[in-house]
Image 1 (tube, rainbow, N blue to C red):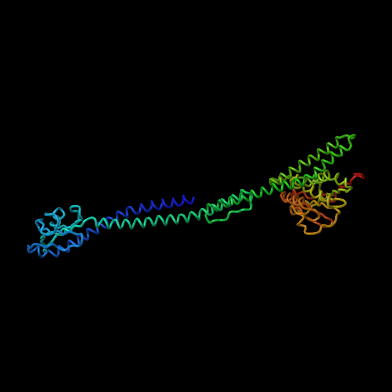
Image 2 (image 1 turned 90 degrees about the vertical axis):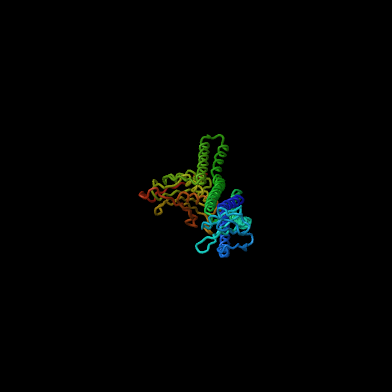
Length: 446
């Protein structure tokens, strides 16, 4: 690019110089020729004045004194040469001067000027002054050489200026190339700086935008891998338990175990679908009733908590038919995270309470474990140890909630209570029933 810009500037400047210098060179040559003829005419007029008296008295005119390189010839009224080294008889130019018309022209290949010699109103002769063209050509060549030098200097200056401009333009292009190479090498935080060139700035902005998008996509893919490994542990464990239980009791009817295994497989499929939805930023919100949410929690976690001799209490403090606007797979994953944390890190009964909170529906998940200490915000930070072991799961749950237009917060540290806030599908349906409570307790033997 540098070479092309430099050669283009040289070509443009050379064409401009030629277009300007050609007519100028012709004009200079014509100017010097006219100046030389004027000099000859002035010299001839001076000599004509000097010999006027001699010619009027009929005396022979002496050879006049001339400038170096000039020849002067004096003719009488009849056109006969009476002095000088010119032609023996007057030519057309000299005869026009005898007729009273002074002029310039060419005689025998030399520049010439003829001026009449007069005595009052009477023309008594003519003076013809000539000069060789060598002197004129020399002056023209010197002028043209000077012009050529100036033109060469102008083209050289244009080339130097073009190189400077080419370097200025190529630096940001080279910087863009380096930034693109860094992005291609995986450094997605690399950004191109502004250059002040509108087109290059537009290219830099587009590249920065695309680098940010790629960075975001890579982060989402990495988050999906981490979230999938975290969230699939629980359903895989449930599936394994169902299959091990069936193998441990071969005499019993395997159909219930197979049905439970199918439910665990459905749960795996639902988990993967929810994580893919989050990774692709394509959550599809729909109206889901509160009764469905409590049924999901009961179906998934009643048996698992019962095996640990821990009751699951479901309390609906609003109309079970009230609907929330959410992505059902995402809410399932959030409840799984909260209930799994309560099972692993909490104690005693686990209580899920659904209630109305202003224009939202709140889902509280609480247990009877030790109070949570420390900064609550650290519990929701991704890939940190967190407090009491909370970390990746809560970070995923909060991300799912926010992607669904809701919120997930730690509402109380004692007893540990996490609250999920969901949008109401219709604000016109207010909870008409308060205090409906259903409680599910584990059997005597897990």
